[in-house]
Image 1: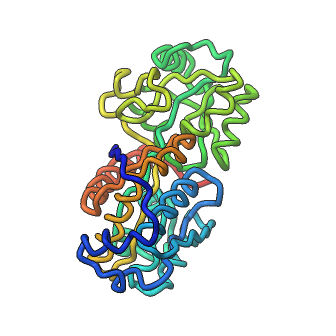
Image 2: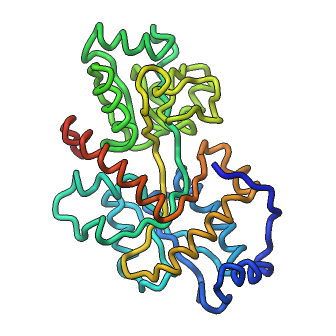
Image 3: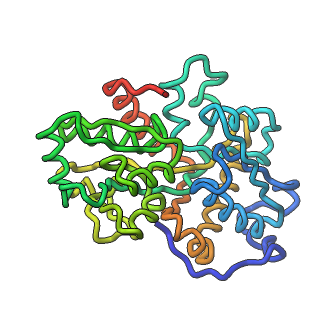
Length: 324
């Protein structure tokens, strides 16, 4: 992750930065920018988008409007962006739906890979494997041993069906040779509530979602699904270091443009987002969410998406995952 100590810039100081990147202030943006967010207001992805957008607004001297359009597994938000001019003023904030929707939904109104240009990954949300407080296993190795000894008896909750929590759970089952019972939830808060009440044995949810039952002493975290340990829980081992090398399945969100958007404006937006993410105040505001900010280049984001697409395609096919 990148870090920085550059002071908070005022909107009026944005012009020198824009000129330095080769754009006169009159060239772009020509008015308010719209980020159409495929997730509900107040959630982790929305919180990340709003905080970065606030800083972007100050840098470019134009407001970045957050437009939440939920529904249709993010297809509603995508269609809203498709109806806008392709002039670098409207972008989509989406997540793994970019990869999983074509594998799970028939008769989509567009081809994801042909329609959407990756601009930048905004953030990654490491996930945890956690168990209820009175579950016997104290380590991830003991959890897997229990699952092997009693196949098909241990439940794990994720938000939602076919989300990144379930993908991580399916990959763990595949690599560990175990069989768990999947319990899909509408959101991370719902799964956290139920494991806190002891209604399910375990969960795979984000570091942010696990905090309430953890603070109440109702759960134990056994491992994280990210390749490296997360700053939120530095003493918790990764699955990658626990016998499953390369295991790296986090929740995430990113910015996308519609094909036909000028490449220069896509690069400009990526550069401005990268500048915004450097600001320590942005990072400070987002620390409670557990988000790890990224700001990859369009090429780097595309390469990462291609790798995720290969992995998730195999997972969905092998596990027979379907939307519920």
